[in-house]
Length: 435
Image (tube, rainbow, N blue to C red; front, top):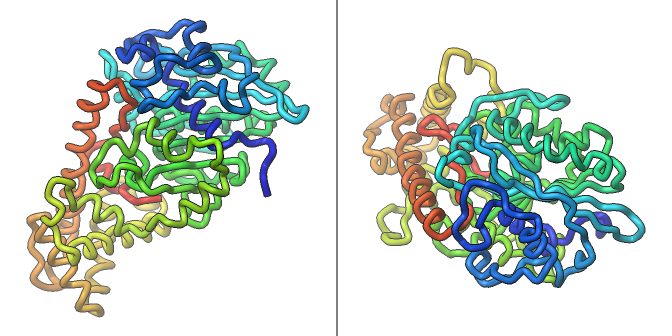
């Protein structure tokens, strides 16, 4: 059944992409610290949209050619990341079927001169979000700064029949908190995220789902988008279960396992931004994705430059490790972490579990031995499946992920494109689970 109140995939993806134009000089491809003029943002969001070639692979993402052609740009607002204020998003209003709609769009990560966005992304401690519980501290701080600008549109937002919160990357995380805030005030809210990292910790994600209604959360991610893949335990996605109807994981567009382009908002526009694409279309496309953790294992172990340097059996071994880690995440909760790092806890738990299972299943021993060999660890028998060895394998996985994030900074900054988040260091491997 079609939800008449929701944005179409094209509308949502265009809105998320256009949020970047609020950053000063993003239009010219030379973004800087500051906020773009309202006139220029209006031109890009609901005007002729000229000049978008560098930012969207040649696509004009102005809403003029969509059903939102009559929308009104109400305000461009700032946000603060690590104490640096820049243009961060806009408020848009329109009417549809006799109902009043307001859109809050928030942009994703940028690495300008201060690298402030990246500092916010990497701040993985927790802060409390009223009504739901602990959330990512850096995202909460940015949300608090955005809330100041949104206060100027208080009446418009509270009078709306529907509030739409839209964002990509860091913007998706902030949009999640904006949506939670207004849902907590009794508003009917729709949330649309593209390539968003995990935001809530422990029980916060289920609490946000209950507050918003899972049917009102449209989560879109490419299956090999690095931002969605990992983050520090115990953060988790909203609508992150494979069984969630609106958890729409799409085949990554580049065809390359280690391509940082899988995270770019321009690629999400190309994936779902056609006028004939509906949410049902996107859901059907997501059925083609292998959601098994073998995807993560293949991504970690292969390079587009040398696709044959890892055997399938080693990938199976790492896939089993990631499945076990998924099980631990679901069953262990946060109990027992006090005094230990998450990676230490998981290493000990995995070693205990895998020792018993490898004894009963000889083929698993072969897989683990090959995975260990890849990580320069040694497993000759059951006694060698120790927390130290498993930790070595997990840290080796992170050593693969880290250069990818570093390369994303270089590529993204040089091309003026949205950047992937960098979440944590070696200890962040505890969150390296698809979903």
